[in-house]
Picture 1 (cartoon, rainbow, N blue to C red):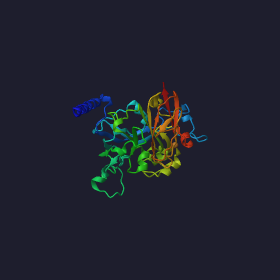
Picture 2 (spheres, rainbow, N blue to C red):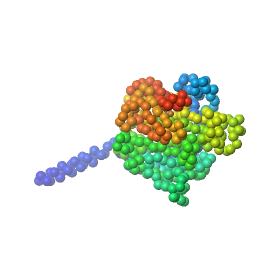
Picture 3 (tube, helix red, strand yellow):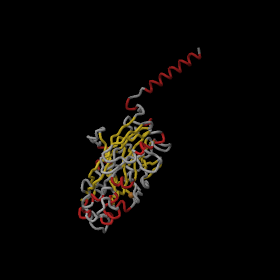
Picture 4 (cartoon, rainbow, N blue to C red):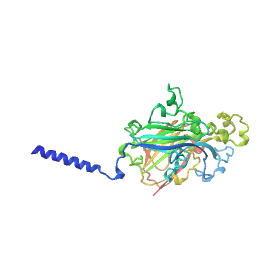
Amino acid sequence: MRQRSSITVAVLTLLAAQSAFRIPAQNAIPRPRTRTYFVAADPVTWDYVPGGRDEIAGKPYADTAFFAGASPREVSTKYKKVLYREYTDSSFQSLKTRPPEWEHLGFLGPVLHAVVGDTIRVVFRNNGHRPFSVHPHGVFYEKSSEGVPYNDGTSARDKMDDSVPPGSTYVYVWAVPARAGPGPMDGSSVMWMYHSHVNEVRDIDTGLMGVIIVTSRKMARADGTPKDVDREIVANFAQVEENDSWLARDNLPSRDSLRILSPIPNPSEVQAIYPWFSKFSINGFVHGAMPLSALTMKRGERVRWYVMSSTNDFDFHSPHWHGNTVTIAGMRTDVTFLGPMAMVVADMIPDDVGTWLFHCHVSFHNEGGMAVRYRVIP
Ligand SMILES: [Cu+2]
């Protein structure tokens, strides 16, 4: 009798546990799935100062000197680039609309969200003028999805991802195992970057870079975002060397491009006649030109900042948030440090209402324009 009642209790407990798992759809743990993204490398004219104003100084851009005592800077802030852009399907006819909360991404590619246990499929279309690729960090890739040409002992099918010719499409497939997700000291999500890696430096300086965000399964919403975060923000600190871009020659004023005869000029040759080609940028914006509306958050929101840097010789940055503090791996700060291609995740619960500076604390980067503003509203 006693044994029978304990069986009954066990069955009732099991039934109760099962009904407890019938939780509302918005709290349900998403099943592992394949997330497909249609991403093209597109020729685009990008403006580093879209509003024409230095919003750190609060003046028209052309009125403000580059460094104190420097000669007046060039007025055109538009450069031909090749950027990753997201499309709705494999016809690559319709660009996917970027929602307002992701407007701050600027010249970065789309964020590829995934959950531990998922598979990411990137259908990559090269609309550029030369071979490009997509190389991911962190996720699990086989040799056919690494996106880098080097002497790795592979051949044939395993080389097709290395360098995708202009006008071609290639499908990259990346698994997202536990080691691509949050580690023991991480929060509910981690960041990885992706970029073209046929010629790593020149491809990135041409504009081909983006971000992958991987969320732990138990903390993920259906769209892959972490459910303990209200707002995700990505910030790429980059000294973009436009002199190193594949399109450097096309971006020179015509009087200067006549002085350079080679179709792909030597970067130092361009730099010598046109020093402005070094762009001290956050997501492709300089001197506070990122629209304030793109970085507006509410007091008390749980804001996760994914901060990273680029690959050039001087891509050492110290991002500094004014007005509010963050925690990074459980430790409190308001400044962090990035070496080349570094990635840091910082959590903020803003409590200080106002318009605040977010800038690089390396002094010549800050003076050179590596600064944006963010706004906290009540
Ligand atoms: Cu810096």
